[in-house]
Each structure stands twice: as C-alpha cells, then as structure tokens.
Image (tube, rainbow, N blue to C red):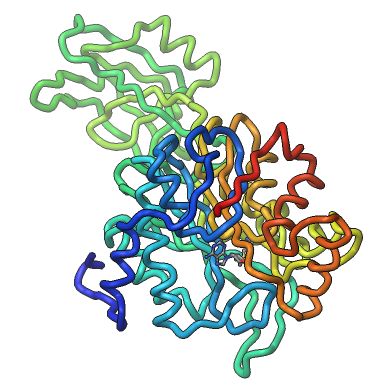
Amino acid sequence: MRSGGVEIGWPNKSAVAKQADTLARTTACEFETLSGNALIQGDNLDALKELRRVGHRRYRLALIDPPYNTGGGFVYEDDRSEAAWLSFMLPRLLVARDLLAADGLMMIFMDEANLPILRLLGREVFGASNDCGVLVWEKKRKPSFLQAQMGSVTDFIAVFAKDRRQAPALTMGMGMAGKRYPFNNRGNPTAELSFPAGSVEFDLDDQSVPKQDMSTPGVPCRLLDRVVIKGGRNANPFRMQGEWRYSQASVDEFAATGQVINISRLPFRPNLVKAVPSEKKINNLLSFRTNPGIPTNEDALAEVTALFEGETVFDYPKPVGVLQYLIEAATDPGDAVLDFFAGTASTGQAVAQAGAGREFTLVQDTAPLPDTATGTAARKLCQRLGLPAHLASIAAERLRRAGLDSKRDFQLVTLR
Ligand SMILES: C[S@@+](CC[C@H](N)C(=O)[O-])C[C@H]1O[C@@H](n2cnc3c(N)ncnc32)[C@H](O)[C@@H]1O
C-alpha cells in the first residue's frame, strides 16, 4: 500500500490491515439470497465481509459518511485518537474496495480537520492514481464560530475510484457539444464548392485572405476567390476547390438552415459543426448559492424531524438532496449503492428518490443509545414504537416513514 511516495504510519497498522482478510464473526442466513434493497443491522466490518463472501453484487458507488472523529458527544461514538480512527477505517475501506464494480467509485464525507489523513488513507487503499479529487459542499447558510479564527461552512467529499481509467465522469443534465465533420475527404473526386456570404464562421481576426493554393501534403485544396473576414464571418461569397465530403446542394442546405460551417485556421479546412447533446460534468462546488437544489445541514435536520413528529433523534444527518445529487451524478439506472455508515438511512431514501431501478445496501450498527438529549429522544421513540433501542431501528423506521414498506421495499437483515 503506497500513496505515491508518502505513506502514513501508526502503531497497529499492519495488524489492522490483516483484519480485512479474515472472515466475519457474525452472519445472517439472509446473506445467501440477498437481493434488492437491504438494511443490515450490525457491525459494518462483518457486514462488508459477508457481502464479499457471498459475492452476489458489485457496487457502482459506495457513499459513506463515517464518524468524523470530532469528539462531538453525538448519538454514536465519535471520539477516537487519530491512530484509532485510522485503525477503524482501514480494514473497512479495504473490504469495501473489494465490493466495488470495476468502474465503481467511493465517496467519503469528511470535515476539514480529518480530510488530510483520510486522503492519505484513501490513497493507500485505492492507489494515488485513483484519487479523483474532493467535492466541497457548503453545508451551512450561517457559520457557527466555534473555532477561534473563522467560521466553517463547508464539508468535503473525497472521491476515489477502484480504477480511475474505467470510472465514469460525474455528470448532471445535458448540454450541447459541437462535433466536427471535416469537409475535406481524400480520394473523393475534385469539385468546386461555393459558400454564400455570411455562411461560414471563422475563428480568425478581421482580414482579407487572397486567393491561393491551400494544399498540404495529401490534401489538395484551392481558395478560388479573395475572402473578406469581418466579425467572424465571410463578408462575400467565395469558392473553394478540393476533394469534398459534401455536395453543393448540402452546402446550400447548411447555409439555408443555419447550420454551422466553421473554419478555424489557415490554410482553410472547413468543418460542419453539429450540436450534439452530451452529459454535463459537474464541478466540485456543491452549494445552494449556485445550485438551489443543494440543501444544507439545516434542511437535513428539518427533513428528519418532520418525519419524527418534530423530535431530534439524530445529530447531523445528511440532506437527502445532496446524496441524491451525488448518486445521480455517479451511477446509472439499475446500479447498486452501498452505505455502510447509514445513520438515519438518508442514503436509502436518496437512492429510492433517484429511482430508475437503483438499489441500496445499508449497514448501521446496534450500539446502545447514549444518555444525551438526542440519544434519550431516540430511545423513547424506539420504546414507543416497540423497537429495539438503537440507531438501526431509527434507520428502518425512517425508511418506512419515507414511504418504503419494510417487507416489500427493503429487507431487514440482522447480524448475529
Ligand atoms: C456520521 S453518521 C452517518 C449519518 C448518516 N449519513 C445520516 O445522514 O443519517 C455515522 C454512522 O455510522 C454508524 N457507525 C459507526 N461505526 C459503525 C460500525 N462499526 N458499523 C456500523 N455502523 C457504524 C454510527 O452509529 C452513525 O450512525
């Protein structure tokens, strides 16, 4: 495991890496036939190993939001030393990498403080050449000024590919790109083409180009008239002689229907430029300022409390809209998405909303809920609903309240 020269070391590193190679300590009979959406309750290292052992499915996207290690007193453990955090993450990332499709991606949410070690760790697991970069998510409309020097309004999503050469571009929506079709076609009979005034777009400054031989080796081509280029167009009609792909009738039609004939340089080589729809790559800033569809932490909290009668049963869930954006950008219809730090199952809801036959596998552990205000509210909710008091119950209940029927729409699997 090397990250292109730099390697991080910590006590126990090689021992914890070996944890990725052993079998799970717990299992469930459902693994043998697992298909469709699933929420697995239990430790994610065991769950990942079981998914690898049965080998039913490869994931196009693993989208995870692991504990940030902030010491935040949350409803789950979030206070490890850096070395302990790395030891916790390394075997999980190694097994999860095995579960990715050859063209799969892993996206990992992280705060600024832990992003550097996460990236180094990711580079070791995936290889430095498979580090695809970092998306910046503007997570807050108003900063809190807990840090002395500045308020923080961003979180990060580190993106790694199983194999960057095969991984897809992250795309959203369609744009128009120009595909160029050259006029010159070697071997065709020599003919004369006449271009009406204004019919050709030039990427050249205003000038007058005298008639001349514009042939280059293998490309016979003559400009038969002087051309005056003004404002990027031909001010006068002109003729060219050469071995052409298009007839005079085609040129007349291109001109009449306003299609783009482009000449970008000297010697002249005309091209037909066709507008073809192409998928637009996303940029790495995810912000409500530039994209009103990108929600914030405030929106995420409102989303979850609305599902749970106004109660706060989880600290800092991720907004479904951001997850859905990432899922749609990174996957195709029918792809499977894995989130092994499921929390409130926001990724499950996002996959369901992205739809088009996409499926999710979620993992959430069953650690006891702490005695914080949020933990107490979550425990009381579980008691009211007659569910075991842990976050996996909250995750399953969230999916149900978001409209997924727990028998028909997702399978609940319990590791024992
Ligand atoms: C930052 S939270 C994820 C929140 C989630 N993205 C959401 O929107 O609700 C991390 C979650 O991972 C869970 N977790 C931590 N360690 C785990 C483990 N070993 N196995 C399974 N889940 C674990 C925690 O209980 C917590 O719910």
